[in-house]
Structures are given as structure tokens and as C-alpha cells.
Length: 448
Image 1 (cartoon, rainbow, N blue to C red):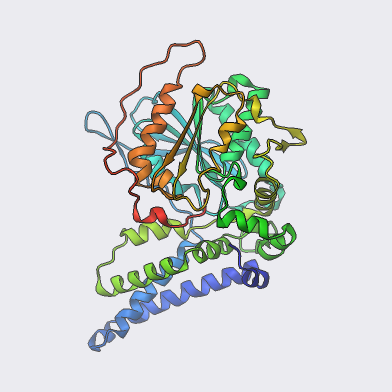
Image 2 (cartoon, rainbow, N blue to C red; image 1 turned 180 degrees about the horizontal axis):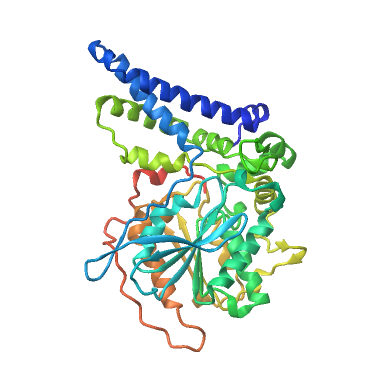
């Protein structure tokens, strides 16, 4: 959660100056500690200095770099590798719709739109989710842009604009698309589907899967919801909103800076992060660390943060968390009421993690009650035992248990009303024997 003192004092450029200075200090320490002449001194100080420098330089450099997708080739039925290309399908100012095209492979029957969160990290946070789906699905993802790089002339972007983007993306992909929304966009994906149900029923998605999203934040209290209730909107705007500095194309745009968000993320689990970095420094000093080791793979993504537009962040807190507009079916877009009860032909599934302390169990499943027009046999809910927030969409629980359930749900609802249900397609995947046992990062608090 935001720290009042830090955010109230530091400007956007001051935070960037601190980041840049620490990157420079790390690079300097790395170079000095690695100087050949110091190898003649039988003391570990210089090796530790170099190790600290390598870890520090890399960490602070990652904070302003958008990670690459780096999707590995997909193995074909005949043993051939199929290279994956990331191709924009729809380009917009604040976010693109991208397609992961698998070379030399016919389009897969399952078409999936994965709605990535806009909550501080890039869509690449869902790299493992995309990779796990590519063998069985044609995958599209919402790739949101860093607000610091969007000129002020492009205008505002709030929760209503986000919802309209989703409507446009779903309509573009056609009625055979299956939407999977993870965490923050879950309530807005629900609203977008309701808009299509009323305005263009033929363009509705075939299925809607909501994973760990705050549809009704009051259904189960967490540190996130408690914070939203404690602080006023005036305090929030004063302490966390900054103007982008002149270093970037979005100079002058009001944003919730990624660096400020990162401080909040780390503060939620500071002891664990501190221990991880100390261990990595010793690993570097011993020569057991590597460029692609577990620590670097995780933190290269975790530390890569993006700015959110001020209006999006503030409207999310006020309208979704404080005023409960989605939870109480009072959400409006351009002054028009959006009735979630108008959804009738879309199958809806919710997925929650029993140990999720970001969107606790109860917050997401509330969507099923809101979808009063959807028949009960087209509603599915799943609570994953032992799973944390990250685990339900990218960890072992997702890979071994939740993913097969979601694909079965898609297959069960692949036919339009009146059509014969096609047989389930064989899925590629492992055993579910160790479901519920999450990867070590599953318990980490990646706030999405």
C-alpha cells in the first residue's frame, strides 16, 4: 500500500533520479569489484562488492524496461517445433490486442482472449499462462501500454474507457471467442459482456471465465480492500499521483507511477524480498548464480513496472472498491446504466484460490449471482485448495488443475444454443497428482 511520507515528498523525477543513481552505483561497484588487480588481494570484500553491484545494477535497470514475451516454440504432433510470433491485431493508444501466431499451424478451434490486468505490471506477467494455453488454443492478449509513454494529447483513460476497449476487442474477435479475465479486469470484463448482451448480442463471447477478481470487494476483507476503505480519495490523489517528467513522451500526464507502485508491492512482503536479494548476492559471490536462474527470472518480471493513468487508478478505487458499482450492478458507461442481468447466453465460470490474500474467496464468485439471466447449468465455480493469488493463473495449481478445468468448461459450452455440443478435444498437459502445491512464487504478493 502507498506510503504517505514517501509519495507525498518525492516527485516523479525524484523517484526516477533515485532509481537511476542506484543503477549507476551498482554498475560502479560491479566494475570496481571486478578489477583484475584486486584478485591479488586474499579478501572476499571485493568479490562481495562486485556481487552486490551486479544484483543492484540489474534490479534497478529492470524497473524501466518492458520485458519481452520470449514465448518458447510449441512442439507439434510430428515432433516439429513451431515458432511463436507476437503480432498486433488491433492497435490503440492505451493498449493493443495482440495475437500469438504459431507458425505453420492451422488456427486452433479454441479461441481465447486473455484479459491481462492493468495494475502496475506489464501483460508479460502472464507469460507462463499464455505458454500453457498455446498448445491447445489460439491465444489473444490485451497488451496495455505504459502511461508514461502516451502523450497527453491522446486524452484520458479510466475504467469506462477500459471497458469500451474490451468491448471493441471482443467484437473484433467474433462470437466464438472465450474470454478469460485475471484479477483486476474481472469486474470490467463482466460489464463489457453486459454491454454486448444489450447492444450486440451476436457479438457476445461464447464463455467468460473470471479468475481471482474483485467483483464484490466487500464479500471478503483483505489488506487491499481495507486500505481502500481507510483512505479518502483526496488523500489518495495527493499522496500517489504524480506528473510524468520530461524524460518521457507522456510528459505532463498525471499517473500513479510504477516506481511508487513497486514500493507498495515490496512493502507488502518486505522480509521475503530482502532475504531473496541477500541470498542472490551470496550466490553471485560464490559463482552459483546465472543469468536465467530462478531469482532473475522472477525479479526481471516483478521489478518491471508501468505507470497507470491517474484517472484509471482513481476511478478503480472509487467506483469498484469504494462505491461497489459492479457489486451492486450500478456501473455506468458514458452515463448509461449497464445491467449485468442482461447476460443470458454466455456461460460464466469463476475461479478462486483458497489462500488468495489479494482477492479473497467470495469476491469473484459474486459474479454468478449478478448474472441472474444466465441459466444455472451455464454457471461454474471452482475454489482451488491451497492456492494463492499468483498460483491460480500462473503457478502449479493453474497448470495442473485449473487450466484443464477451464478448457473443459470452454469445450462444454462451445456450441451455440440449438447446436449439438462438439466432443471435448484432447488436451496436452501433465498429471493433476500434485494439484494445489504451488510454486514458491505462488505465495508472493504480486498485486494484479
